[in-house]
Every structure is written in structure tokens, then in C-alpha cells.
Amino acid sequence: AQSVSQHNHHVILSEAASLELGCNYSYGGTVNLFWYVQYPGQHLQLLLKYFSGDPLVKGIKGFEAEFIKSKFSFNLRKPSVQWSDTAEYFCAVSPYSGAGSYQLTFGKGTKLSVIP
Amino acid sequence: KAGVTQTPRYLIKTRGQQVTLSCSPISGHRSVSWYQQTPGQGLQFLFEYFSETQRNKGNFPGRFSGRQFSNSRSEMNVSTLELGDSALYLCASSLRTGGHRAGVYNEQFFGPGTRLTVL
Image (cartoon, rainbow over all chains, first blue to last red; front, side, top):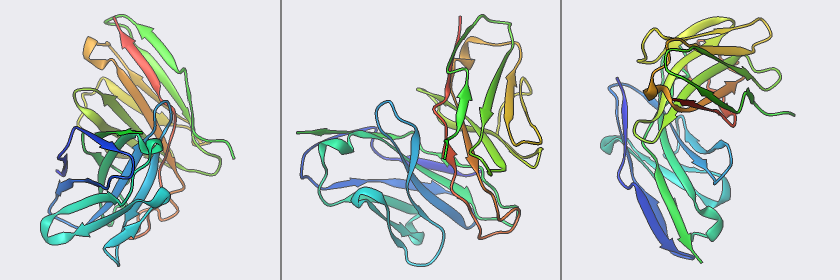
């Protein structure tokens, strides 16, 4: 069974600081990788995804993530955070299989607080 | 286009009771997945339905069950409620146009959730 580990439970940054949230996964096969975000009072929404190809993927609102297969990592980055980025961020993995699995395994989440 | 809707939004039950939660996917979406979110365990996959058939199942006891109707709407049922079942239950829908073909993955869109409190 797959598992996802997010290194930080709560991150506090000042506006304009750079952000990197760590995510490592454990799974023996090929995976699809995701970052989801949950803004206060809002639905969980997709930030970005990796299926194949270029390991550096870009998402909405200036976020990007890099898939490093050898490290089983999919870290999320943003060069300059804004107060509006305050939210909880979830890394997730889905097995890439012939069964077309839509079963997402999520990390425990990282709360990001951005101080104006 | 309307998003994923879940009813009811809030529910209070007592131990031993059963509960049914409903999810209406985005129009045209044929896959519905259910997740349980708790502070301790985070987001955990319950099951996925596609074309009225359960396709995947998470590691939850048999008290948790679900079904999907021909219009893709889905319900999940929890019988003999326990205090630990208190959680936010999220539903996600997807086009799932790839069916069972690998390499074709359609984004999952999440609903607002149903907050279940068991007393």
C-alpha cells in the first residue's frame, strides 16, 4: 500500500518569502502525484499534478512542484508567497495502473500561515 | 456549471444509529469517490464508484458502505455509528473518461463535505 509523508505540520512565513513544502511517497510502482489546497472555508481544490514527462510542473497561482523519482519526492515551491496563500496544502498520490485507479492517498497536510 | 453538492452539510447523530450521506457529482461526471477527513488521520479514501459499480475500496470496516445510481449520484451509509466516526466526509467527482485505461486521468473535483458529529 502506498503512503505519503509531509514533513512540516505548520509553516509560518512572512509575505514575499520563498516557500518549499516537502512531500515524500512510498509506493512500489508508477504513480500520479498531486498537490491540493484548501483555503479557509473553501473546498479542496487541485493546485497541480504530475502524470508523466517534464518533472517540473507548474500549477495555479505561481506554484510549481518538482518530481524527483530517485528520492520519491514531489516538493511544492513558490518563490514569493502572499497573504492569500494562507491555506492547508495536501500532497497526494494515486497508483498509475491499468485499473485506472482514482484512489488518492493523501499526506496529513501542511498548514501555511503567511504574515503580512 | 454547478459543482459537487453534498447533503446534508451538517449532521448530529448518537452512537448506534445509522446515517446516509448524499453526493451529486458535476453534470456529466461518472465517477464518485468518498473520503473521510479527521484531525488525527487526515484524509482517507473510503471507496470509489463508477458506472454504478464499486471500483476501489479503502481500509474501512464493513459498517461503511455506498452505492451509485444510474444518474451518477452516490450515497454512503454508515451503520452502528461510533464516536470515532465523527468527521468531515468529502465526495469527489470525475469524468473518468479513461475508464480503466492507464495514463488517462481526469481531475477529481471535491464537494464542501458533510460534517458528521456522533454523540
